[in-house]
Length: 266
Length: 260
Image (cartoon, rainbow over the protein chains, first blue to last red):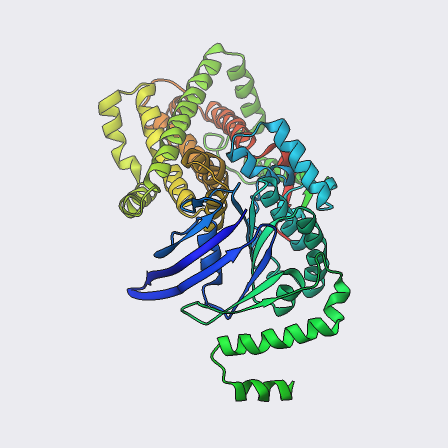
């Protein structure tokens, strides 16, 4: 489903002072597209994602999915994968995957069948009766992805999903989830700090400026998805990384001279 | 999280502790020289216990005490949970009621026992009322804290995945708050047992606490000790029931350590 973000600005009050988090964001997402939002800390990437999912209403502007304006959360329209997994510790893995379906009033049998199917897709079929505390961080994040996919959402919103994982787990998990998402033809918005993650996953990387967050640049990644891990070692990847690194530095307010000095020193 | 069964040494060690206690008791009766008016001999207490157990009135008294404790605990649990849940719904209510619940939790409520006697008489009503009020405050306070401190990430999940307000309360907040609520309920259960038995001893016409006070006042030490043993057994049964109620089925019989 197509998504349009039209002139979105977000302002909020924190400790008595007004903070402009996002300013005049305009962006369109095509069906099945994978977009990564990249930017310095505090630039409003997560705030934008929160607005896309209907968890927050923009101060100005609107977000349209299909024909309707996003005003409230609807997991069938857009489902979240959070950085901290946010699994319910008192529920087993099967029930965690099916929690959104339970909220939607889907019967127990159907819920369990769908959850089991997704756990198999995620390579976790034997863990259904376990509890989140018995799983590693990477496994828990796969459960969180399965929970979101269980809703069969038009759009998947991923907020730094691998932020809490080590490098090795991020890579292997990234590869397997990337394959699942590509096969599902899922529209995905990914918030990340990681240049590598953005390039490896996305069709398009949106670079945002420091607060107030604005869209500074867009970079297309033309390599077809799902991408093999070897893509990370290719020349194209290195060039894109370098290009995005310079953009990110600019977004953080570093001048070009500082950038070139950092590059030389590296 | 590591989970393991109780060690096979647990019960032998408990039996050893009991044996040591009986040993100290026997020493007190013999070389210790403690008067049998204060510390009756073990055989005399066993005899008195046998006599008590052969009398229907003992079971009647036990049923009264058990019923009073159970009624007080159930009333406190229902109203305490509801009060904690209601008070945690808005920041204003929380600010108002948190300190009231803490006050009730820490205040010596025994000061108000005469009011219960005046209101409900010396029968079971005053015991249930006093026991319920004593157990209400720890349950209400812990429930308030439990509902007020549900992790924001859990609430975020509920909202993001389309939970209704009812579903958020009963499928997210309640299970998330359960560990803290459970500790409040355990404290409340203890409070209701102590206060009901104490109230029976202070002013009553029936119950095991009343029998204990009566035997003590008439210097019938073996009978008083027999009542103490019966009350300990009753409290043990009640504690077992509370544990059974509050321990999830999958955790029963296990000791859980939070270790990775």
